[in-house]
Image (tube, rainbow, N blue to C red; front, side):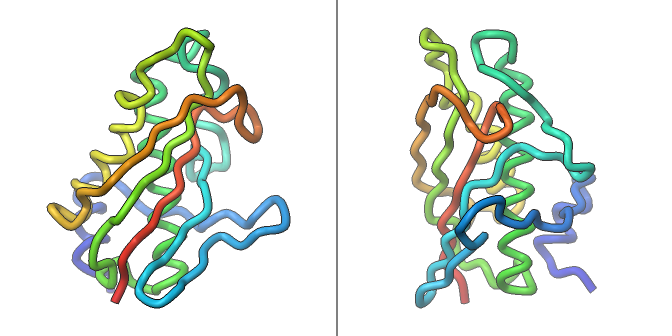
Length: 155
């Protein structure tokens, strides 16, 4: 049976996909003590297609980017569940790092990353509030519009 966090996600129409495997020489997550570090997740949907492809400010809208960031957060949670077996073992979302595939004059990356931040708060309530970094980058794997990594305090 799904835990409280997964039930909350399901009530919002969110089902966690099977987590993706790394595409290079790294692991999807590392636990060190009570911290779980989750590698960057790009904005693949459950069917393995990019939610948004290309650059924000050059063909990809803030709304599309926000939806892509939300998808990255769903993929982060899929990795957390794979690591812990139960999202209810998350004590706190500590930090999200967001990478926005940006045109040189795109300055609204923080608005885009709200898609991921809002999902964490929706899933975990106050425990989902976190520190955050948003960085505009020249490119991302597969020309994804957004990639998000996370650090979680876990029981």
